[in-house]
Image (cartoon, rainbow, N blue to C red):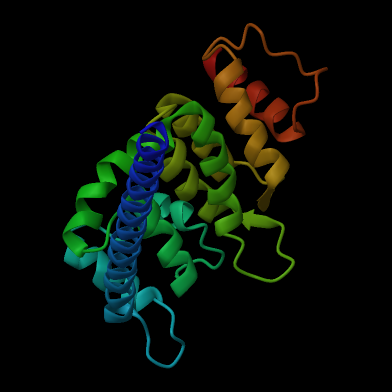
Length: 232
């Protein structure tokens, strides 16, 4: 009798394991199909905006996308979308970049992508992400091979777009200074990142904790001198 009971228990365990395994396989299969369908919709959305010859979404395609989402193409959220995709070339999205961004946003339709923008904005504004976004914004604007700096006019527009909502007074005064000074025609990455650190660390507008002996870019020394002279 004991042997029989033992045998039945073994059969029962084997049956249970078989059912569990089948259920797991079914779940994996169902999950895989859903993921495949999602990617198919993401790809279809990409091709609805992509240039047929380059197989990329080009500036014209991005403008159409923005129009369909009812978002201005100069809206900072479009730059945030490029950041999410890790897009390498300004004004262009490749299929792989598009897939990476939209899959991360869980957006496989135009409506879902539009609804994802507010959450994307919140994600970017987290301190841990914003410094990476700020860095990316500069690199994204390096449109020529081996380019390491950006002209003053473009920098002024970029500063207002990326940093204006965070440090409006500092940005407004720095832009004013950049436009009237004649020592600098371009801004490099060190100066760009230096200004972000400046906004976060330096008391404004009294500059009471600003020490020019520390490793600040020279352009910020000049900016502080100009501001102090302006105030007096």
